[in-house]
Image 1 (cartoon, rainbow, N blue to C red):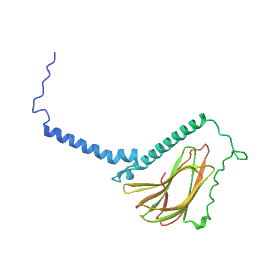
Image 2 (image 1 turned 90 degrees about the vertical axis):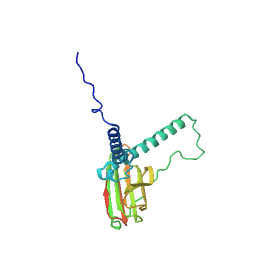
Image 3 (image 1 turned 45 degrees about the vertical axis):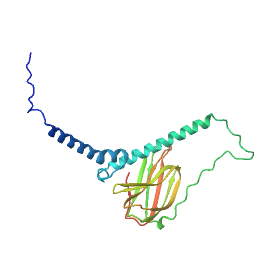
Image 4 (image 1 turned 135 degrees about the vertical axis):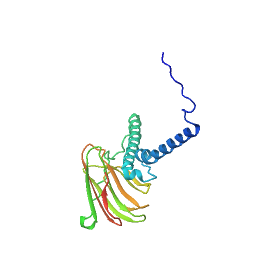
Length: 214
């Protein structure tokens, strides 16, 4: 048999050492939570480090995908309920064809400051943003050619984030985007159709630059 020497009290860590090790581990865990986990999973970036590392964009995409999945699930449930209900006869002379909104034509190119276009394959998403200061206003117009898209007009910067508008199966949109704070403000589009869609975005007004993020 082997004789195993038992540790002496001097070999064991003291209560002070254990407390210090626990506090150090707690501080490291909190730092990882705020700089890695929250930005990459929930697009919450209170320190701004997640944006520098590219983790916040990952969190934004995950959040948007989760929101789209939840909306899709609710729409599927509503469709299933409608399928089991008896059909309502159409009124005499009523048409069973629902008119689809026509894409809004974009104004002449030379009247805009910047223009970008992205081709979205089925299931693909893309994001274009304007670098803006708080209170600046930019006029925009975008159109989806070849189909419709889901979109989220939002902004982020300095640990802040905001969603201005969201839409599903939209062929186009236009208006004025006013920055709520200093940072990047713009659009995320996703193609949920079965064929490629080309999104063309044009803008003018108060902003530093237009850039493609994703």
